[in-house]
Length: 347
Image 1 (spheres, one colour):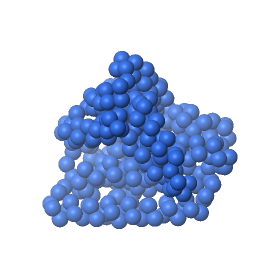
Image 2: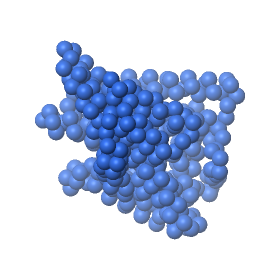
Image 3: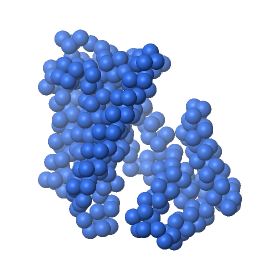
Image 4: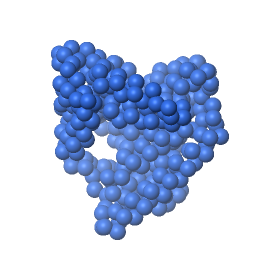
């Protein structure tokens, strides 16, 4: 019981410490120590093997994508391309539909096989411009960007090239389009309810007199339409990214991760060439954005390290055995078990 209580306490500590502004590395180490001590595990072995092992594995798998995604977002922002995209979309659908534009953009990139982590970097400059012009409070920007990539763009839409969709297919012997009708129905419901909820939140914020405000130290450029690249040039790197991912997976039989890496690199190079006269210091922009991207990577990898410690704990094994031995309907058993695993590992 002490070990199980330790898992619950560790998750509570993660929530509380993040809420108070502690860095994820510190938070994950504190939570890992709680699990280790309450489960009677060897401290040095658990930290060196389980924590660092899972953390290092995640960094190794996502190093290039995080760096390239951050560079792509920085180039799009510094060149004025994100402002051009924001302006053209607002002219097309109006400021009232800025939220819809961001949600659809995230969904399209998800269908292109782009990771939710990379979408966050790539779409942020565009979303920031749209939210500023529409005067939507910035605290809602993460929800707007990630609501589609983390739900219907990850597991619901038929054919999504995400690992969450492809791994079950490999075990069950099905293809990525299995259960297409149910997937479409769930996707439509999820998209509609998410849009309605976020619009309601925007309305609440406006009634309270809240407005868009950049983060401390953040400067958003709002060049006039005449100062932005041509519309075709603004969209070209994103179109190239989505098309290349699809072609490399289908025509070259490349894995989803490799296809996204190659496509992201090609899009960064294309953006630098297209906007070379608009980037004041390419070397500095790439260096600073790589630093930012890798800092985010370490934060995410730290929670993966915590998950590695949890999985190695005796209490985790007891919980899994208990969940798998219930007499629930198999669908409910799978749902409850996965929900519990995701909760106690923080992933």
